[in-house]
Amino acid sequence: MSSETINLTPQLYRYLQQVSLREHPVLKALREETHQLAVAKMQISPEQGQFMGLLIQLLNAKKTLDIGTFTGYSALAVALAMSDEGRVVACDVSKEWTSIAKKFWRRALMQDKIDLRLAPALNTLDALLNAGEANTFDFAFIDADKKNYRDYYEKSLALLRPGGLIAIDYVLWGGTVADPSILDADTCAIRDLNMKLHEDKRIMMSLVPIGDGLTLAKKR
Image (cartoon, rainbow, N blue to C red; front, side, top):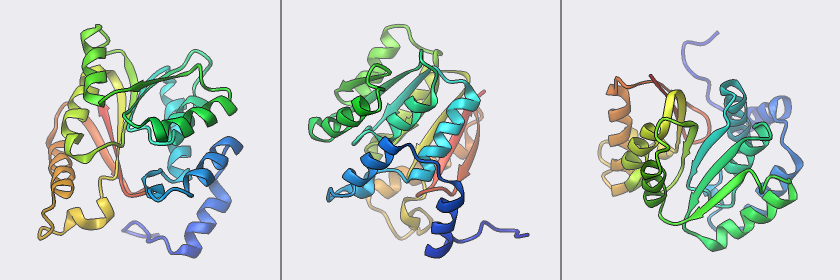
């Protein structure tokens, strides 16, 4: 037993994937193609995608948000975990990256479940709120520009039904959030949100050390 979370050495990380990962072949192909990009580190890890898929099934989620879609791995992992009537509203501004996403969504036959909105995510979230969709979403995944994390969280919380879940990525930010001498804008934005979430009585929350840190916030 251990009173602290174990550190994952490269050997132990490979073992974790060996005995746990059940990656859909299209997700694997998408991950491999994304790894050819210079910005490949923006993609979530496969075990995080699988974890999110499990959360989707536990929630019986049918209506979800994907804020910061990149090449589409998270949206596809969620879509694959949902029933046929499930819907993902995917938010991004990049035609280049989401063109890769759409190719693999089609390959997995999930394109009809994923509604891609090419616009600033805050505009898309405001449009959903203005259309009367508050309190109707089951799940939201936030993995976009860090300066807007607080606003993404607030708008996602408004769109989420009671009992719904928000998953916020990169909340450990390579460990820099724990170093008070690091004061760049992105680190400060994540650090600010982490403190806000810890004190927010509207949610139940837990920061999970998977990937670069994933906070789960359940709306009361």
